[in-house]
Image (cartoon, rainbow, N blue to C red; front, side):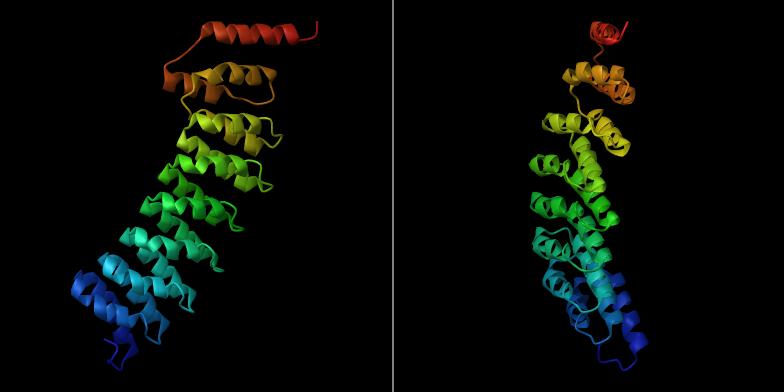
Length: 258
């Protein structure tokens, strides 16, 4: 392929080899990753991702160091499609890339690999300066559903950046673990509506009927509307305690000035 003197032909050939779906084309595509033209290298990386063979992992990991960001971006995407844990170390390094789009694709790729080895890197990505990277990290952590992330996510609820705190609350809700309850209840006290609403929504995703008495008290205090969370928990847990609701209402009435 690289011996063809016409650049346009070489570029088209890289794409065509990927569409063939044959592992016999892998050696030629790995060679194309070394081509002087970045478009050929980019298309070769994409083609290797289409083939989905672990035989291309080393070549794609090397392509993560390519001087051209388009090539690095395609290599990250291809590694995500391969679905091999052998790609994780390289993808974790890609999270430290200077190009935001490369970091974004790395978070998506790590989420697809479904491995707890990706959790530490994705937790760091929650604090990425780029909002879209943080959002993709949130989605990836939600898909992994790893409770090993909970301690770090609880710490992130106190981060100075509002987006980091909100994203951490979102992931904790997706995980649905009772271990997240204390941190989310604390976030309800935050004066920022974006944050306490995120905490309320996440609490509603946790099957914990013990929460209801506390949520009723906060609801009746009138600072935060938690009815959606209360109703969701009641439906999910098939639990409704009329006496609890009335007691909370009575407490609220007694606390009112006469």
